[in-house]
Image (cartoon, rainbow over all chains, first blue to last red):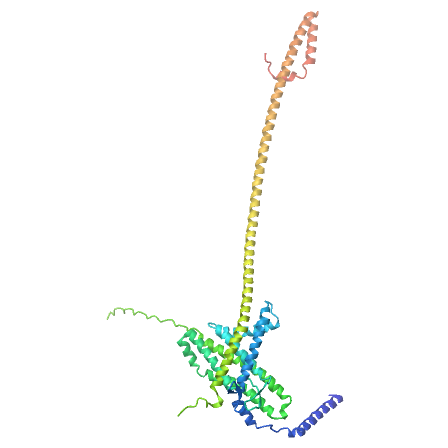
Length: 284
Length: 180
């Protein structure tokens, strides 16, 4: 190592040490909670203190989020139907390719996992996948809403609420059950009921995954020192990852179980009884 | 004891679940009608279009292959036919040549026979005229002999005249027997 390089190395080490010491001394007073974390997390799960008035009903903010997401998606779909789809060409442009890719992906998922019956499944997976993905990304916007108590609340992801997750999990189970009944009748019901834990596992997996992201974000935001730079990673990247992963997991599981219960039964060939050949006359 | 359906842990609320369900049903119907169905229909239409194109191309390829095979067959049969026609033409030409040769030979034979006949006729005519002349000479010589004083002189004169006149035809007249 030359003398010049040694000097540069020592200078860098000194700067890093000085920065760390300054950080330790200066941030001493920042690690104070802005509120009670327990209350914040309990509120994030139970929504007891932030009910919203919805046509006279007191609902969780996630219900409003769900309707807002549905509204956004329907307006977008209507605009696409009116202005984009009539201009579709056999050689697609980028946006057309994106739409076709989205439809084709869920249709392909349905066809690959359930080759015998997949017409309705493709449409369901498309809707559910879109709802989960867009709904999860929706919390990035952070739309403020007025609670019934008059406080302001940021609208969360629709499926970060236990009720939304239960709806999605149970509906997926009902769709699987209907596929089993339509394809195999009572045998399909039996096959579906065999997986009785499926609605609970699907619901709570979805709820847990989305809630964990919410809780981590709440925890991070509850400390002032962690509110710089870190939320970019926690808030944005984790949310995007959650959106993609949960969309894939729920649609894949639904398609997989739907295909399993709608598969026609394989009949075993009947064993033909061999006629007894009259035994030879015993010479004895 | 009455079971309170609303008092479920984790703040699970059936009414809100139904609200979420209503929301999702509306979303499902809207997305299906506005996005999923038209895009899928377009994709199927395009798929059908390209399948039709592929089918047409395959059919055209098959037709071209068939035509090629047919033309190759025709070409091969044409070569065979040409060979056959060439052989037939050669055979016909040979026949015609032989016929012409035979005709020429026949004509030559006829010409030769005619020439021979004419030569014989001329020969007969010459002999006859020679005989007439000889007879005339003989008679004139006889007259002269009679008129001359001596017979010897007359005879010498006669021989001289005969030798002069009948020199070239002497050999022929010697071979042929005189028709008296």
